[in-house]
Amino acid sequence: MIIGLILLGSISAYAKESVSDNSVAASRISVEDKETAEELKSAGVELVFDASFSAQDYRNYLERNDLLPDREALTDSKEEDEEPDDGVGSIVMTNVQNTLNVREDPDEGSAKVGYLYKDCGGEVLERKNGWTKLRSGKLIGWASDEFLVFGEEAKQLSEEVGSMRASVVGDALRVRKEPSTDAGVYGLVAAYETLDVVEEGDEWIGVEYEGDVGYVARDYVNLCFHVDAGETIEEVKAREAELEAQRKAAAKERLRQDKEAAKSADDTRLLAALIQCEAANQPYEGQVAVAAVVMNRVRSSGYPNSVSSVIFASGQFTPAISGKVMKAYNGNVKSSCLQAASEAMAGVSNVGGATHFKRVGLHDGGTVIGNHIFW
Image (cartoon, rainbow, N blue to C red; front, side):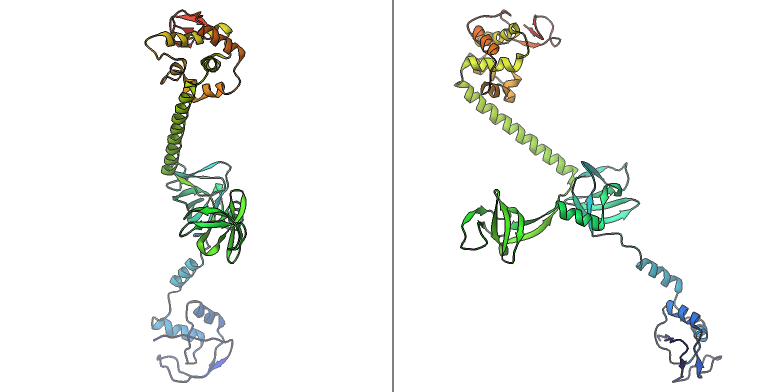
C-alpha cells in the first residue's frame, strides 16, 4: 500500500472513505500544519491520501504503522546525487613549458609511467587530493593538478593548439586543386594517411598538401580533432631506440659513401682534410707529424697501402668515421694543412716511423709536439 499526501496551504479536505486508526475519526478538518507537512514531503511522502487528517495526525499514523520513509537515508542519497561535478570524462590540458611526469599513483614518490609535454591533452578519469588520473594516448596515470588546466580553460586551449585532421579510408584518394571532380589533381594519398584540415565543406574537405591547399571528397575521409598526447615510458624507450638505430644506419651509410668517394679523391687534399680535423689548431710541425703518421702506415705492411684506406680503416680516425673528414674535403681546407700533407707525401717525417698519436697525457713515451704525443 503506497500512502502519500497533497498539501495546498490551508485547503479543506473532505474524507471520501473512512480510515480507522483507533484514535482519529475521518472528518472534515483544515490542514494548516505547514511545517509538518513540508517535513513529510521532504521525507518522500508525495502521493494522495484521501482521508482528511491534519499533517501531524497523518505523520503519527505513518509512524505507528512503520510507513514513514527513512529521512536520514533519503538525505544521504540526496547529498550523493548532488555531489559537485568532478569533470570525469572531460578534457584536461597541460600547463607546462617542458615535461610533466605522470605517475602510477597520486603521490610524488610514486613510480613514473610516462610523460606529458607542453600543449598535450587528455581525458579526466578520476580526481583525488589535488591529483588527476587521466588518459592521453596510450598513457594512463596520475598528474598533479598544479600543472593542469580544466573545464572551459582546457577546452579553449585545446582549440588553440589542436587541429582537425582527415584520415583517408579505403583506397588511395586523389587530392584535387579545387573542390570539384573536374579539377586537376595534385597527387594521391594512401589509405589511412592523415592530412591537416584547413577548411570543411558539405562535400569537400580542404587539406594541406605539400605546401598547397588541396581538396579531398568528404565521403572518403574520417575527421577527428587532434591534440598531442603523452608517451608511456615504454613508448619513449622504443622511440629513442628507433632513433638510435636510424642514426647508426645513417652513419654507416655515410661512411660507406665517404669510403667510396675517398677512393677517387685527391690524396693530398684528403690527407689535408684529416690534418684539419685532427690538428687545425696545432703548430705547423704538429700538422706535419699527423700527416707523417698516416704516410708511415701507408708504407707499412701492417696497414692498408693507400691514403684513403688508412684514413677510413675501421675504428682508426674518429673524424673519418663521423663524416667530418669528407665535409672538410668538400669545404675549405687550410693552406697549412695542404702544405703539411704535401711534405709528408713527399717523404718528410718529423716523428720518425711513428704510426700512432694521442693527446698528451693519454700515452707514456714518445715525441711530444704541441698537444699530441707520437710514437
